[in-house]
Image (cartoon, rainbow, N blue to C red; front, side):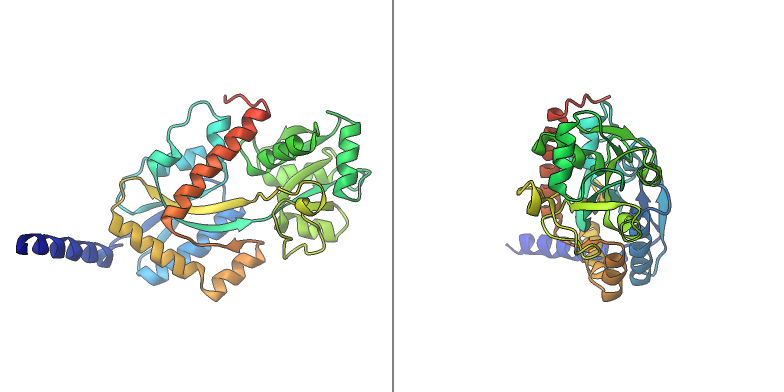
Amino acid sequence: MRLILAMLLAALASLVNAQAAYPERPVRLVVPFPPGGSTDVTARILASKLAEKWGQSVVVENKPGAGANIGTEYAAKAAPDGYTLLLATTAMSISPSVFAKLGYDAVRDLAPITLVSTIPSVLVVHPSVPANTMAEFVAHAKANPRKLNFAAPGAASGQRMTFELLNQALGMEIVMVPFAGGPPALQAVLAGHVQAMITNVVEAAAQVRAGKLRALAVTTGTRAALLPEVPTVAETVAPQMDTYVWQALFAPAGTPAAVLQKVHRDASQVLLLPDVKARLADLGMNVVPGTPEALGAFLREDLETWGKVSKAAGITPQ
């Protein structure tokens, strides 16, 4: 009995020591997107606050490309020592349905730490589209099958899949036009080259208020604070619609439990700081930290959801 107690105390001491010692050198926070986007901005806010808390540099490393898979694979294959973290997004849930060969498995190769934020999306159209409401847009699309296009920032984007989900739920046939990122996709709609797109509320709000785009509905279950006058899809034509872009923190699988616990605790505390919540709210984000277990379950559910949407849309992984 004494031996067992001694072993338990030793294990507890080891856990406490590991937490106390970490981090002993700079930590990398991988962002699988270019600088300047919403995920990059979130990462830099988080990195700055964690660096203050830890007394160590937290360096944001942008590794974009291949639908966010280059950076995600890089992080998944990094040494599982806590010195490489990943700020992933919805793209990670969609990639297995779009890309035939991935160098990682999100469930097997990454350890969930915490959900960071959710970002409402909004369906916008060029003012030339003869629709002022979501119902009018659906009617117009049904009357003109495959004649309307929607812009998407890549095949594996949450915006693309959300539009595919709308097509399926509402019986529309609006065709995707892929672009290399959000800005060129948005510019195509602003110029009237493409009729519609789903984008985050921050990117859309200024253009909507300037009259350059018309907002028809947000895709989340509740209205967005930045566009409170815009109804939800659920209020208009599809009662079950509640989708959003998410951001979440992961580490390579095999990272010591004590380190994961420390990162989870400290990241959660940082995210709930009033100034951090305010800065992210200005970007249209809802801060939603949670447990690693909840994030793991959420990821598995999201993978299943987008797999079904992809299959129904006839998307063949390539």
